[in-house]
Length: 199
Ligand SMILES: [Zn+2]
Image 1 (cartoon, rainbow, N blue to C red):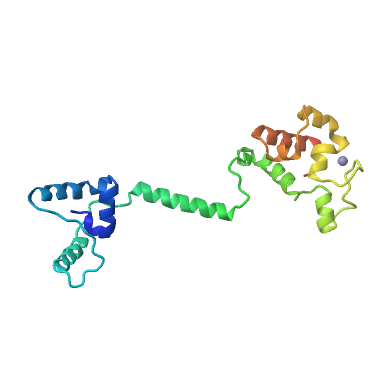
Image 2 (spheres, rainbow, N blue to C red):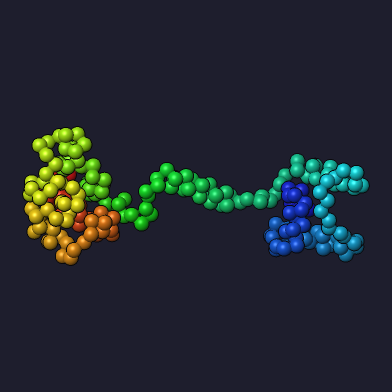
């Protein structure tokens, strides 16, 4: 009965009753052969005090724990899976904006830089340095229709109308251009590069 001592007796009884746990095969076959010659009653006793035989059972159980344990209730594979899942959960908590469908990491390094700057608005276009640090004359786009934001550059700035329609045959949202498919992101990076605007 190699595995019995490692568990709470109650859980063993429950397992015998409900499950076909592989781990319990040894125990089951031992009980079966015991039942051929004896009447066996399985009973969970919550406390050992003053019950004849339980002291002896307790001593034997304690002895058993000092012996080599052949079977482990947790396999290496299970332990690995548990640890991985915990680490993954922790990582996700530290990166709340991570989107597993984001193809950003599939871009080249220079494409990543462009997309990152356009996404965050932390870039060298006039709007950010001017409003944040009062660098430059104004936050106006050279087309004089408004401030230089990602939205203006990608969607409306008339200085890049030709290039824009060349790259996007159909109207595409800012969201699609910055967070869409790999092709979407690559088009955006190409557009940004070819405008000649320092981003
Ligand atoms: Zn403009």
